[in-house]
Amino acid sequence: MTMHTNVNGEHRPRQPGPPPHQHYYPRNHYSSSSSAASFKGCCCCLFLLLTFLALLVLAVILVIVLAIKPKKPQFDLQQVSVQYVGITTAAASATSPATTASLSLNIRMQFTAVNPNKVGIKYSESKFYVMYRGVPLGVATVPGFYQPSQSVRKVETTVMVDKINLLQTDAEDLVKDASLNDRVELKVLGDVGAKIRVLQFTTPRVQVTMNCIVVISPRKQKLTYKQCGVDSVNV
Image (cartoon, rainbow, N blue to C red):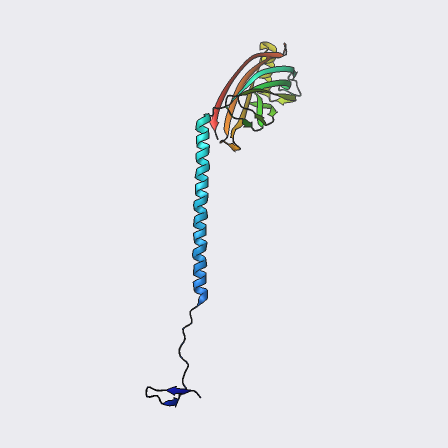
């Protein structure tokens, strides 16, 4: 039993009673709120930092591009060498009323790549399709390569066609062109993809579309005419 002293100095026993009321505050609520606010602040700072770095890199690339003034690369079909042209025909008969013909072809094409820029160019693999009156005959592949600044490079590829059979109308046209006119007109179509590299950065891909017409003499086994057109589009 505990004693209580009143205002008059008398000692009286303390009456039992409920303990004084104590306030308890949930610590977890405040700690979790503080952690969430801290996390949001860190995310905001990180986002601002990444945005600043992205803008800085973009500004550097823009300054470099404006400084070097990149120009589109030049890619042209320079030479066409005819190594072999063979046409096999079969006249119409009772068993086969339609005229048939097969074409064998072996030509070598040389392309010239010109890089007028002060930085290098990265070319991707290119495919060129050889066609006769819209009929695909063969495909020539040029592997991808890197070209240094302000340089000229020559690349070669070969198209080999082994006895491809043509339909009746195309076969008759081929026989007429080869026997009467001694000229077989072919089309060479293809796309060349290139990217300019600046300090480990590459510019958007530039696609060069090539459309060439070549005329071959089956009798002389050589090229008699060549004309090419080139268009450039950004991809």
